[in-house]
Amino acid sequence: MPTTSANPPVPRQRRVQCASAAGLHHVAYTEWGDPANPRVLVCVHGLTRSGRDFDRLAAALSDVYRVVCPDVVGRGRSDWLADPRHYAIPQYVADMVTLIARADVETVDWFGTSMGGLIGIALAGLPGSPIRRMIVNDVGPHIEPESLTRIGEYLGVQPRFATEQEGIDYLTSLSLPFGALSDDEWRALNAPLLRELPEGGWTIRYDPRIAEPFKATTPELAALGEAALWRAIETTDATLLVVRGAESDLLSRETVADMVRRGRHVTHAEIPGVGHAPAFVDAEQIALARRFFVETGT
Image (cartoon, rainbow, N blue to C red):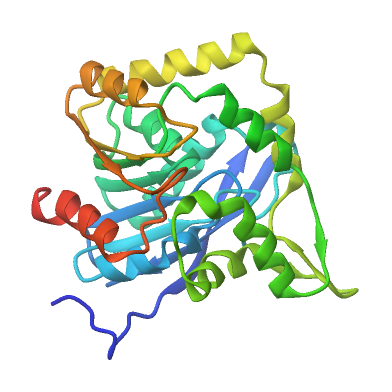
C-alpha cells in the first residue's frame, strides 16, 4: 500500500567506497523503502544539487521501490576528489556502477535530472547496462549554449552567508525555474545544500573545483561528448521518458524530437509553467513518474 502521511517512510543515510585514478573516495546516498527490495530506483541530481532533491519523490515511490539517491562525488555529503579533472561523466558513471553493485541487483530503473540524466544516458548506452527504464528530466545530448552561459555564472562560486536562511534564499534565486514552490518546499530542497562553517556562517556543500572541467571544455570536446550521448540514445535498449520543462533554456523541443526519432524506445512529456528543471515535488509530476515506472513499467 502507498505510504500515508500518518506513517511517513524513514530514509537511511549510507555511503559506498569508490575509486578514481587519483585514489579512493566515498559516495554518500539516501536510501528509502525496504532495504531487501530487489526493485531499485536510482535518482541522480543536477550539477550542483544533492540526492535530497528527491526526498518527496522517493517517499512517494518507496512502497514499490528501494529508492537510492546518491550525492554525486564533490556534492552533498560525498567526498571531494583529489584531482578535480575527474569531475566528469566517465567518473560519475563508474561511481554509479559501484553503487548499483552495492545494491546487489542486476537491473535498476533510473530518474536523472540534468547532469543525472546525462549520467543515466551514458550508462544506459553501455553494453550490458543495468538500466531498464529511465526518466530523463530536462536534458539531452545537445545542451543549449545560453544555458551553459547561465550555469557558468554561478558554478564554482563559494559564497558565504550570515544565516542559513540567507543561503536558502540565494539558492532559491538560482532555482526559480523549478516552478512555483512554497517556502517550506524551497527550504526542503535547499537547506541540505548548505553547511555551517566552524568559524560561523554558512556556505554551499559542494567542491567549487567541479567548475574546472566544465570551464575547460573546448568546443571540440563538447562535440565529442554530444556525439557519444547520441550514440547512447540510439543504441540503448532501455525505455526512456524525456521530460521537458516548457520554459527550459537547456533542453529545446527540437532536441526532444530528435531523441524520440533517434531512440528505440523514447517518449516525451512537457510540463507547463516550469523551466530547468521540473522539481518533481508536486502531486501531478510525481503521478507522471509513478505512471511511467509503476503502472506501465511492470
